[in-house]
Amino acid sequence: MRIVVGLSGGVDSSVAAYKLVEEGHDVIGLFMRNWHDESVTISDDCPWLDDSNDAMLVAEHLGIPFQVIDFSAEYHERIVDYMFSEYEQGRTPNPDILCNREIKFDLFLDAALKLGAEAVATGHYCQRDETIIEDGSTEYELIAGADPNKDQSYFLCQLTQYQLKHAIFPIGNMLKPDLRLVAKNAGIHTADKKDSQGLCFIGKVRLPDFLQQKLSVKSGDIIQVSNEHSTFKSSQKAVTDPYTLTPEMGSIIGQHQGAHFFTVGQRKGLNVGGKLEPLYVIGTDVITNTVYVGQGDNHIGLMRSALLITKEDVHWVLPSHKMEIGETRKYLLRFRYRQPLQTGKVKMTEEGLNLYFDKPQKGITAGQFATLYDGNKLVASGPIKA
Image 1 (cartoon, one colour):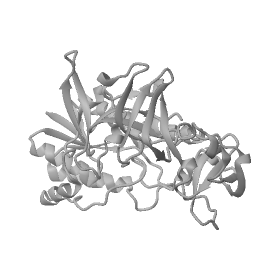
Image 2 (cartoon, helix red, strand yellow):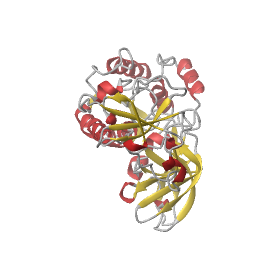
Image 3 (cartoon, helix red, strand yellow):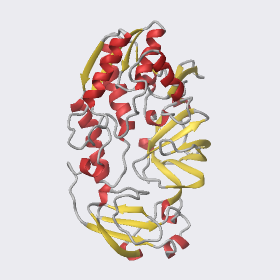
Image 4 (cartoon, one colour):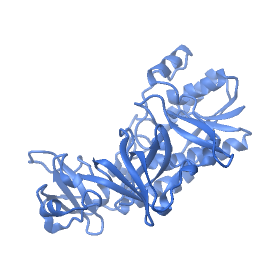
């Protein structure tokens, strides 16, 4: 089978390519260049040129063809502009999830098919299976990676059945230490290379510097709200819905440079000292340009027991699991990468899919992606509305 591998220059994709070559496939290595502006990138952290050279050296070592493909214009339009728009609205986006849906398994997949490939492979720690459903058709399943510390199924939660049909994850059944050992034994020079961090294809950035390319700096109030405020004490729905925060609920303790630069649960960047416990963002208002904070990571303003994915935003990775209005099911839930799966239930309503956690969760933020799992199978996902 002809398979195009997304060679990123890291050890994971290197071993993915190596395994496919060892299995006898016709493998082509492709490096995606999606970012040119290094002015906001922290120096020496995952520069694209070094990664491209590493990818080329791996391809040479494995004896496979290698190409560089530039999606920088599309990446800026589909991912970066989306990020700016979400932050501007006071939401917290996850560009890595959109990058997988829009770039790696869309533009990259199209390019691979034009090269005569039947599938694309990446170095993601996840697995894929297929099953025959009731109507006799094949349904492709996205399954968590075998390494619980590296499982990346969350980042692929927006993939479609078409994309999964053409996807291969060669290292999904491996543990990271074993993978590095395979790379070392195979003579792959990226065996000990440090894992990349930061935004997909951009690297580790100073987020405020990055956002200030388009989002203006404007001073506003930081208001501290007491954990004992009457709103928290009397509200019966507060753990389900975001609290309605107003300036009258607290006192001004400092200034910030733009509410759109902050997210619920954030601790760093407030630059306010003199408190017994650290301050955490419990809410933002981009209309009034106000940041609300609470003292301590157990502040009730950080806690919620439910969230909503609007009807039009619900994406069923497994279409056979679609729910009808009024239907309720139990699933394992997650709204953050590497967050342990949480027990809970979901209910489909006219408004959308409501997720109810058995235990209150900390730091739920609009714009993040919430996911549903049936065991280790990812069932559905969508951005959090509220």
